[in-house]
Image: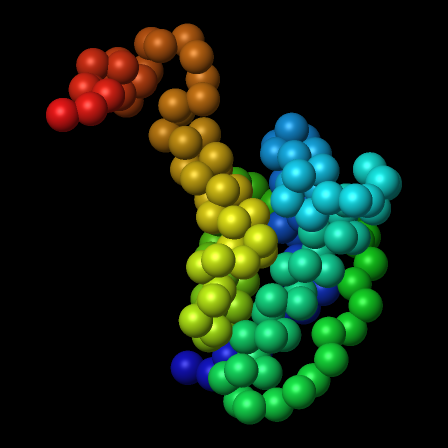
Length: 145
């Protein structure tokens, strides 16, 4: 399968999902993972970082030296459901992983953390009612062995 640079809409959908569904994580990603930027620039900075790593991956794969275009966050793409966001994240991860240092990148950290948060929500682990079967099983599981 060939590697390609995903569309701005693809990245916008991920960033918008993060901003609307997980604003605390969006804030932490902008503040601590990216750093040195004002809050209104978080969306653009996170999107630019994701795009840059995607372009680096494609350049590495095809031995090219294409520049990363400027990314401007557009918070207006249609909202996506958690399962759709998960698939978009997996797609961007796949298109960005050609370089050996991908797993050490800030972009990988953001996508991986977002995937974990989504999966925990989908499993009901972040609903602190403690009444769902998976929560009960999780609560009974050992913390260490």
